[in-house]
Structure formats: structure tokens, C-alpha cells
Length: 379
Image (cartoon, rainbow, N blue to C red; front, side, top):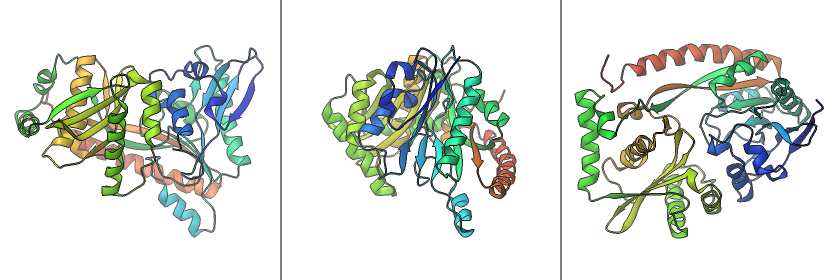
């Protein structure tokens, strides 16, 4: 088969149906509509240091058979795999760490495939994607190439091609066929079960009700209200609110069933809201904001409402976002995540290799220690 390889500076250069046919239908944050919304509504570009350089491989008939989301980066913001110390080391040695190439869904620390392959794609397409990305990194004079949050199934491909594996940790929930929320809590130890019930009761006693909306049922005022809450979180904690109101409005329109907006309401007023994405078998918690502080409201809006949604819908997993050891006592257990790295400078490649190998052992010990804090009854 003859292949045509193209670097896309806009995801709109390829048809949505062809991109989505590359095994991303289960992952809303990798779908054409999501990536296009980021590009079209001012969330990427030079201002934010994310320039699209997506790899697209077409077959003899001109149809897309393989691709990789890829960005030329001029900072490390919005990646959630922290390499600031690597950048500092480059600078101390008189070298430039930026630009670099990153394969990710911007601002989204969620696991999903990064080598996108049509079910009929020849096996060699995997190697072509990796080779093309490395060549692009060299041509653009990038310091490095990074693949963030790939699936476990793709880890072997990166290792075979000499990429350095870095192990991280998030806290995920798994649905073991729970009938309802009470059935889920029945698996907890007595003290942890009481804690969750107490937190939920405090929110109820505060007179707070919840409304769950998708892209079809949420109105423009709901999105304007949520975006104000989203921005307020960054104003309180620092950082830049990179996602525009137009972004949320566009994905609500283009991906209505894959959007879940949880509103906390009291006396007819929205006091908090949590934004989630719904995959084929996984719920992904993303953003949250509140106007007033209520005891345990964050846990209810961001975790318990989502858990209840997963159980009712029969979703298999809930990934509520990066970090947060406080999630363990609420049923989210330590789960490994991965990223893969190549650095053009051989000295730094070897130094980073030593670092990630040492970090890997420490991360395994860390997750084992955290596992002992599981709220579930010992069996």
C-alpha cells in the first residue's frame, strides 16, 4: 500500500467522520469535534503555546487510516505531566527546551490512545506515526517529543521504539456491577461509609438540590453561568482559564450526549457546578466552580453525583481528574498512568532515563502505600 502523510495545522483539514473512525469514539476529548472546538474558539494558538501539528496518514483511496494528535509547544502548561525541572536543567546548560512536540488532548489529563489507527490499518502504520513524529521533532528543532496519557495497550509500542516511560498516579473508580449508590457504599468499611453518608447529609441539610444537564437540555444561560464559575476557580487558585465560553457552547452543540453539567441549586440560584465528559464506558470529571462555600459540596458535586450517574448508566469507570489523595476515602483508588519521552540531546536523554527509572520504583511504592488506605472492606 502507498501512503500519503500530511501534517495538519488545523484538525478541520480532515473530515470528522474519518478522524473519529480511528478508534476515538470512546474518548470524547480525542474526538474531532472536541479538538476542533479548542482550535476554533481561541483555546489554542500562539497565545497559549499550543500549535497543532497533527499527523494524518491516508491510504491509496485517500481515506484516513492513521493519525496522531500532536502540538508544537512553547511552554509546559496544560499537560499535567510535569517537566519544569527538565526545562530548568536545559536552561542551566545553555540549551533551549522549547519548542517541544507533545501528543495530548490539551488541558485534559485523561487516558486515551495517542496512536490512532483504523481497524483496517496495516500494522506498519504504528511505526510510520512514530517515525514521522520523530522526524518532525528534528525538523522543527524541538528538544523533545512527549506522548501523554496513552492507554496501557499502547505502552509496548512506545517502549519498542526507545521512548522513556514515566509512571504517574491518578485516582479512578471502577464499577463492580453496583445496583445503586447504597450497594456501592455497602462495600465500604463502617467508618468510611459513615463519612460519605455524613458528607451527603450535610449538603442535603443545606437545602441544596442538583440538576444534571447535557448539551440538549442546558441552555445558553447555563453555559454562561458555568463559565463564570469556571473562571472564578482560577481567580481563587491562580492560573489561566484557557477554555472560552464559546468552547463549552460549541461542544454542547456538537457533542450533546457526551456533556454532563452538574448544577448545585439552592433557593433557585446556582451556587456551584461541575463539568464532565461522558465516554462510551467512562465518565471524565474536568472542571468545577462555586460561588459560596458549603460543607462537602465539592465532594457531592464532583464525586458523588458522578458516581451515582455512572451506576445508573452502567458506566465502567470514573476518572475525576488529576491528583487528589482525598479521593481515596471516597472510592477512587490509586491507578497508574503513563507518558513516554524522547529527548534529542543524548546526554539529557540518559539523565532523564535514570530519573524516570528511579521515579518509577518510588511511584510503585507510593501507590502500594496508598492502596492500604482503601475504604473498601478487606476480603
